[in-house]
Image 1 (cartoon, one colour):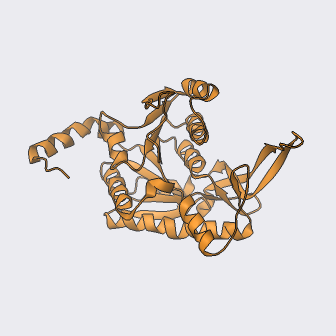
Image 2: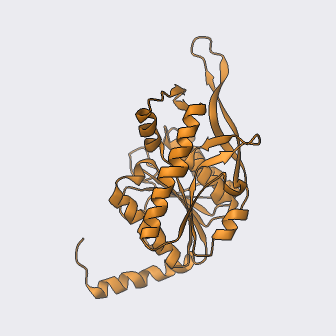
Length: 295
């Protein structure tokens, strides 16, 4: 790190004041996942940034994924996954491992890092306190041979239907930092794996969060010439999906942003989680990073 003078440090802190006031006592949901979780140092920096938010009277709620870690564990245990239309089919053996990795090792590792940085993190999943109820996800694919649409059963995979805030309201604003694994329960009491972006969108919507930050491994939404688009309205975003500017894996991410805004989130930002202090840059500086999507 380049040495900066104490005066510069003081100036930087002073410049952050209006940003801190903007988010004072507000809830910010941060989706932290996959490759953004990176190595230990990146994870520890992220944890420090989350503790800093809490210290400045912001209420952070962390939702994490764990795709790479699940894949590693399935491989280690020799459990083969079936895929349909590019989506993993989660059978009974797989959901057991998914729960073990998400609600167990990944969740508690993040909790550990936040606590080590001086915070008070509480690790939970959407099953706790009936927080997130979900219904089974079905997807339809067109059979290339017959051109007939057929539904595929993805197994124990769900879409959030209802968020109950009883438990989160006991934690938020009491110096406790909820760290949530994206698992939910079906009406029948089955454990369902929910896409972490979608889960974060549902929770942020229910909390009427000021911001939902989606930490990904891309800088944000890019235009046709691969330049970053700093902000978009929902209308613009829909246009860019229609004309193919937003494509591939970015489509579900942007659709999650639109869904969260419709649920009551004020703004959603897609940012590169691999960038150092991405969360602080976004919230506390004029520069901001990534793409802000708003109504």
